[in-house]
Image 1: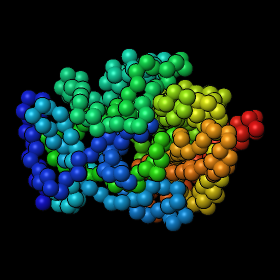
Image 2: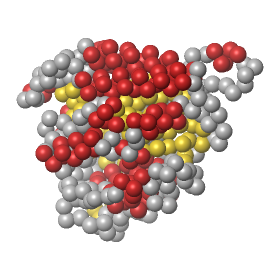
Image 3: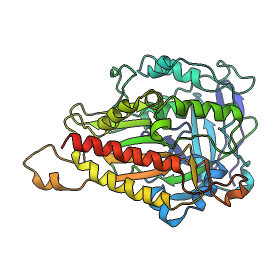
Image 4: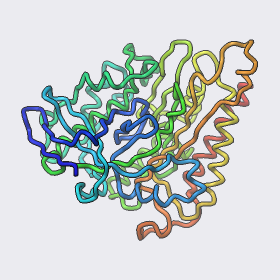
Amino acid sequence: MCVCQTMEVGKCIKTVFNRDRGVLLEPFIHQVGGHSSMMRYDDHTVCKPLISREQRFYESLPPEMKEFTPEYKGVVSVCFEGDSDGYINLVAYPYVESEVLDQEEPFEREHPRRKHSRRGLHRTNSTTSSSEHKEERPLHSGETTESVPEMKSPKLELQMQSDAPFQMLDGNSEMSSERISFNPWSLRCHKQQLNRMRSESKDRKLYKFLLLENVVHHFKFPCVLDLKMGTRQHGDDASEEKAARQMKKCEQSTSATLGVRVCGMQVFQIDTGHYLCLNKYYGRGLSTEGFRQALFQYLHNGLRLRMDLFEPILSKLRRLTSVLESQASYRFYSSSLLIIYDGRDCTTNADDMFAQEKTPIVDVRMIDFAHSTYKGFRDDPTVHDGPDKGYVLGLRSLINVLEVIRDENQ
């Protein structure tokens, strides 16, 4: 049995574990979007804070959808521990039901939010991101920014390594000068999650995390596009305040017109050897033309547009559209769609015809089901008819934009 005993020692949280069974979790360095921190469990597995609704949804997926979702691998118990230097780590243990407090939506509580200008949120380069990210995190009741200091761990930075550095594109289409060894969004989410968990340390010792397939593990240089799908983002159980907030985001972005918006992106650039990154704030401000340009950027390796990617991606998107059109009553509110390919899965040598003609491996996966529903799911009082038209609109818009880019560049 996992025994967790915590006590405050200055800025450090001391914890006693049976280390023989524990797995030290590391931030997932290729997380490009979302708000919950994705953690690397092993080469083939990631984990995230468990929301029981999402767990049940994964457990009840129809067979035809499993091709387009990460494999669900179960649940682990997660403790957080600090060392003598004040650095906090997350450690996963085999799940034992009696040890872990049940949590419906641990990190989805309603909190007053600070106001920001859109311009300020778009400035995501290295000189501004730290202060903006610290400010954006919703505070717990009675909490001040001083009571939950920024988490900084050189150990963490040593663990989070990529074969190529990352650079953020800011709102003015300029590159940040700093090159780092992880997607900056992943570290942002990780720091916020540690802050949340530490603020709750007196009330909760263990957390439940979902184990899911690491869908980028096949790719050496994963290029990832995270798209928020649908014309509506709030679940049926959302408060009026949250529903209004989400509807405003949709109205002010391409979600309302196209049924899809950019939520995050990283694309490997062969000419410079680094990943180009965009985050959700950049994506929210895009017009329809800006959305098209972002897709073009995602499929461009710094030297040329990857024409070989269009048909494999379009084929999967058309197949997914067909699958979702057959799912009567399903709604995937606030769900995202990942498109993934390898940034070096091609050759720049025109003499190597065999490599040029190889069909690249691409992947398309639906993720984030904390607000999804269907008829009979957990006795939800609201029942919807027919397929999710907002999600399908997003898929059709995505297919149309990709076809236009392909045809214009043939």
